[in-house]
Length: 243
Ligand code: OAD
Image 1 (spheres, rainbow, N blue to C red):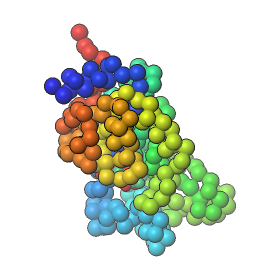
Image 2: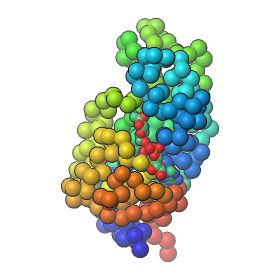
Image 3: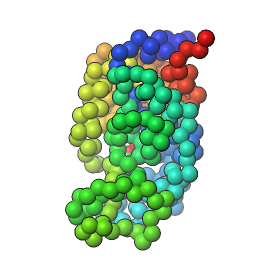
């Protein structure tokens, strides 16, 4: 029933905004954010993904990112990523906001992805701030050095305690406030300010739809709950009606 009601809301919407999280890449074989840390030498993600963790041991943090890069490089987009990319191409007024750094939305063909937490495929120099794409699966001689100034490079991602890129967040905020339907898929909605977009959408009048196999911190503010994997649910929700 909720799927039908949610499909109707999407079909009737002029503007749709989507917030995705790690769960959308789970069916591509990429572990969700909170499973990464424990999988690697017993560290928690919270220990590694912080400016303090990097200052303490940049090589160790880079080794963790290098390991994640190698796993993400082997992953391919799944039907959930493709359903969003296809929907974007068929729609006007569509905004895709992601917390993911894996680049799978882009690989599925999604245009103009708002990456709230940066990209694992980019580096930033701690000295000259130059940001560059680096698509190598493994980077030798960690931590890597800036080709321009020789400074130390860090992954161009947002860590705990850091500020989100302001222009990206502003665009996400504008899309959240303007949409008729806000879809939240594959995120535990535990990390702010990304998660705060969900209650904001609800309080500004959007119909909010959640796609997640499990209950989350925002389940109580959503209007339609679609419990299941996004690779199955999103194609059902977003595909044009057949026949
Ligand atoms: P989490 O690891 O916190 O949550 C993953 C969510 O995906 C959970 O709610 C799962 O129930 C759900 N899930 C699992 N399999 C799924 C599937 N097949 N389909 C749909 N959902 C599924 O990851 P995020 O919510 O993305 O930020 O974490 C948010 C942010 O926390 C990350 O971007 C990261 C971290 O702080 C930074 O690194 C700044």
